[in-house]
Length: 428
Ligand SMILES: C[S@@+](CC[C@H](N)C(=O)[O-])C[C@H]1O[C@@H](n2cnc3c(N)ncnc32)[C@H](O)[C@@H]1O
Image (tube, rainbow, N blue to C red; front, side, top):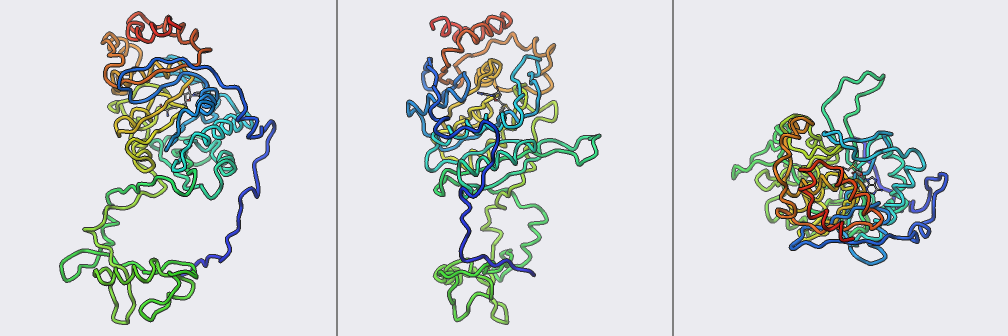
């Protein structure tokens, strides 16, 4: 088997290259943009803070007022598809029209601002598809540092389709995962082992315990503890011990090392001690809604709740503060609440704000009843605005008229549902 030997001196690539394009602003210019004025209505026992406005203005306001410090940021921005998105009831939600350098700079400005609001323990996940993920990877290397790049996760987003173009079917999108520093929150996630994986636990010891035997060394020579002699043996050439000699002694004492008849040590990994298989960087199990029984809000490009559950569990703790400033239907906000995390959501679409209000007061509906005729029959059920899961609501004061007009144009039953919000807007 070929082995890779790590070079003793690692090359530092920080600032070695960058992505250049027209109208790329300096960081100072971005941080010195004018922010906006915000008005808000506080609820009793809120689970989070929802903001209506352009996230650039709102984030600048947070920075100026030192308002929040986030442990986790998840964003799922427009992907540069050149598409106008409507909800399942055919209401306009948002336009995804920026292309090329304009798109890159739009995302870069927001990432520069977000970094200012991240705690030293924070992580950020940026959800994109193949159109712009490579360009934004380079931008994130510049902003967060290449050494803080943690993973590029591939998600299976849909079932295979009948593609007619002369290429492979596209069923994946991507999550770029970076941390602010190397002190980031990390709760390793595990999944049940597959049948094939279980077959690897092929040994049974004299107490009847199933286990597998794995090497005690890893590729690369080291000068520290793990490169030293243990029990009279040096690690094989081009390798180092996986643990320092003191930990190897402990493993041996507790019966976790198998010695072959020729004196070769291997680590015993017991099935009954295993938490499962640690999660890898290809996620197959979180497709977006794909059958009529799956419950959704009906907002376009809404993401799978279990995808957010994995991210939130891995990269935040109870009481962590989480930001999603492209909140859409509020998937991140809702899952954060369910997992006991506090949140801040931002969106500049009236349809998104309406959807988040509905999601928090009435929950989700099966995909099958989201078409216009069926949805209107189900709409006469009054919304329990603010009663079930309460959040604070704030908005950029420049947006008051826009939201007022949007609510005025809703059907009468829908207007009743937003009476509290209407009353609040009237006061401004
Ligand atoms: C892909 S959707 C997010 C979907 C969300 N992850 C979900 O599960 O429902 C992108 C959202 O970003 C919002 N958006 C786009 N540009 C924005 C901006 N400049 N400020 C705030 N929100 C923005 C859109 O209105 C849209 O709701």
